[in-house]
Length: 429
Ligand code: PMP
Image (cartoon, rainbow, N blue to C red):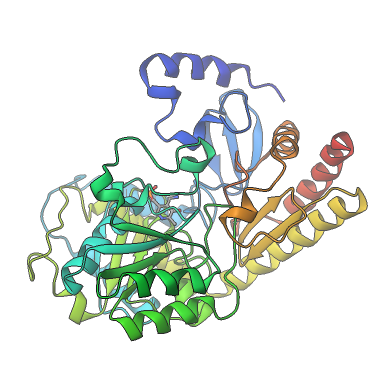
């Protein structure tokens, strides 16, 4: 496949946009080469500026769980846009999506909509601090909660891909309130809680991290966090920006049967428009302005187009929960097919998967935390990535990212992907 026009468009973009992109991981820095410029997308496929058709395993980093340009979502946006694009005043559609989200997710009474996952996590932490009257937070190495200052401490995703898990510009004052633990290592959390008695407002965690590849939690880990929080007056925040409305109707909380105190959403909840949200029970949410003292706001929050898109998306998932099973089956099929190819070609690898989140690591070790995720062979990953791209299969351009499957994928697409993998691996040997 030829990516000539994409390259030319990237050169133009680099002149006026830092690094040519509006979000770092799009830049292909970890794998080399220039990013693909998209012209349009439909179902499981992307169509790029050179006229190539690519099977998409990124799906806008998660939102497009039902495929690109899903008709009910597109229709809802078109109809709303005709009525005006923003008012900065309340609209009925905000209540409708809030009612639906509250009914789908276990244990939340109220939800506040914002414009990104970053905002959701940032606001959730502020709320936890306001509610508990404490300052410190615990996060996990390799987890990514957006680019707000307190989270850029050993952050995953693009931050680690580009070698700045601790970003310049974050003050020492801010950094000192973020304590760092190891995912799947309860002891590391217990020690921090003990050493900082009565100072910790919350533990924020991706219940299934997707920003150091995909890492399912060990049995008992999230349950252990829950108990630790209960025993120490600490709030547990689940960052379900990736897992929310993806691992189940009720997200990771439902699938893994552990409840958090505050839950953050993004991606699927906006149907592909810029939306985030955070939610909790009444007792905590009443601390939020204008009801309570913790301030949080947004000119475009609850934007009618975004809410209409999100509502159409959640309605589909609510009415057809078999989508989650079908997605799981498709992802398991892909997992099995890829494993077989790597094994028969003696390529050292580990594949992690839960539901429709999957990642390939060129490493012998089990990938259970940031340290083990970092052991993967990046040269192999680069070859694999570019090989798949030449075959017309678009996977995440970093081994620290997860692939997100869409229900628009057919078994024919999956077979094509597995066969492409076989051809790529033959060249990697
Ligand atoms: N939390 C998680 C778990 C994420 O994966 C992301 C983004 N990938 C964010 C928060 C930040 O979301 P956004 O990019 O919408 O700000």
